[in-house]
Amino acid sequence: MTSEVLVIDDLNKVFSAPTGNVVALEHIQLKVQQGEFITIIGPSGCGKSTLLKIVAGIDTEYEGSVTLHGKPIEGPSIEKGFIFQEPRLFPWLTVEKNIAANLSLKNPEVRKKVDELIELVRLQGFEQSYPRELSGGMAQRVAIARALLRNPDVLLLDEPFGALDAFTRSHLQEVLLDIWQKNRTTMLFVTHDLDEAVFLGQRVIIMNPRPGHIRNILPIGLPFPRKRASHSFQELRHIVLKEFEKVEEPLLDQGAGI
Ligand code: ADP
Ligand code: MG
Image (cartoon, rainbow, N blue to C red; front, side, top):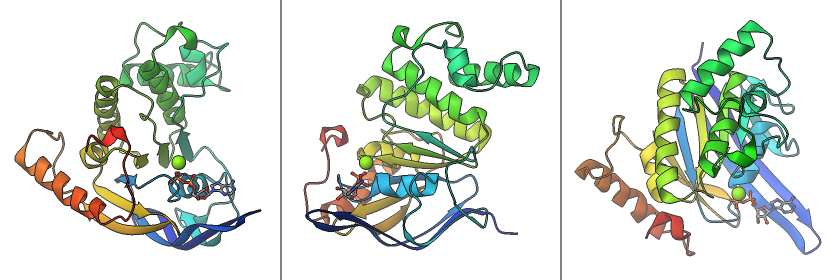
């Protein structure tokens, strides 16, 4: 019995456009262990979102093999939670109803799980609030709780904190790590932010564009909780930064702070 939850073998993806074909992903090889926290970083257009959508089963037109627990991914399902940059909540539902979504809060099991998740994402007291009453960071925590309610095998996060201010972002990073340490959900987390990639990931995947491919996979062997100010964190950040500098194009947005 393997502990690999996700196996991507020679994945290739081409978009045909009027201006010609775009090779969005070329020869992607990746094995993700159960419970692993993977961060993916690379410039705009290098295929990060395409990769996540294929793993999510939202895009099923590709060449190669992508399996979850040994089975090919055939479409979206509750085993694959997806968190977008914007929370995509139902504006007409309260926080707790957003988290429960199509499940009934009258079901005691659902009720219990929703209550546990509200505590986990630190939203006690806001159960009856509506999305318009929440800050961006709180709304994103609702989206995370909603995805976790389905006990996903893998949580796919596409720049989930990209629209948040630096303070909220670092708070949500702590919340997410707390969730990960308690639930051991396998995470595939896309970011533009180098600090975020090194702070969260056990492995950082660096991607390059044209064609979109994995340039390098760097293990981050620091124990959790990590301290940004520590010498070892700064050393590793520097190693990842050096790898970045080999990318031919300006890679980072202002979020990376370099
Ligand atoms: P990233 O998330 O890293 O910014 P994407 O995965 O969104 O990159 O896009 C990878 C490449 O594929 C880009 O060149 C983009 O223009 C192209 N692409 C993405 N989606 C489509 C689509 N639906 N049709 C045509 N080209 C697309
Ligand atoms: Mg993207």
